[in-house]
Image (cartoon, rainbow, N blue to C red):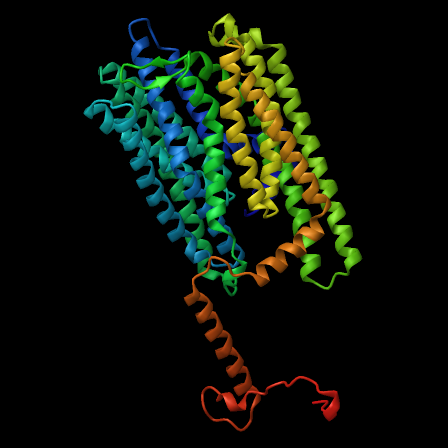
Length: 519
């Protein structure tokens, strides 16, 4: 949104052995900070688990999983729309509006997370009142983290962002250990763990608000975009919601399937499936970090050049050359992402037995880990392709592809586990593969025909006003008339009124050859 790739690329090119590592580390935090924070914290907590406290740890783990699941689904559409609004504000140089947008987004996200958590925990699982209170509060805390992460992707103070996650990690682990020593309930322990994430959120909020409150003091804004050129925020929200649901579809099928395990609070999970698939999806982090540092930067550069050519005085031939360069860059992007993830997935699949032994999992989970590693390869391709489609403003295509992945991930997981009870992970693998192929086909078609798509979309935006209230159209017509009259007043030397009357506005009549009227 605001050049994160460029700054990380500068950092990677600095002299010294640690600069590239620092660049990769910061990009990793930006790409998957909350997930990595939770994995490391849970691993540290797991190292102190005894036979007597194992049941307690399982309850805490179930609560944390549900906090992530519920909060992500509840806040995804809100955060996506807010990020798009913030992007528009940055383009218009209206930096003074970013802090209010961020605060309102955070408030709505927390309220949404609390509401969805209350419905899930009280209606779906009917947990006890005390656990209900603490679990709902935990979801509210985690819900504030997602907009903070999204908005902090706009700023370049990577050291402070990374330190925020380190402090949050330390707080989560310390508070969880203290709760265990004081023999608090699992619900309270989960709330204290979420409080560590809350500390990270507060630090991120401080970084963002400090950055843009200082940046807004000396910036002049552009005129706002016409309403008919604004993006379809409803479609953006729907696409984000479907994306969040698709990430959890296979997990939900397993939670309520044959692998279901109920925690003492009554929350359904599937540890046999969850632990291994989470490990497989963590293998996607290097490719996503690579995407943040290099790929998004190259595509961003080409898109800006392409748009500048169209908006400037570029000829049609020049526009086609820029479009061809953009198409080549997108192909190189996909190739690079595939190679990075192919290396990670291959290593994890070949060394699956080693990873299983090192993490203390069961030998029977080895096949599931291999399936998850291969599925992660296709999932990364799907994420990269759909992200570029969204970057090119193909919001409808992005939404349709997310709906496809949601349906395939849920249905194929359900069908495969019903027909082949031991073939865990095959449904996710097939869903990711089919969705990745579809996304690449759509992206290839879009990038090959980007010129036609661009002008067709511009024509559609300029000629349609569907879904807009008539009052907005009337106000726009009045403003257009006002500007026309004001322009005529400025050109007319005979009018002394603030705004020229309609009679002073020059009216262009159609040319009539029979009358010889050439005016």
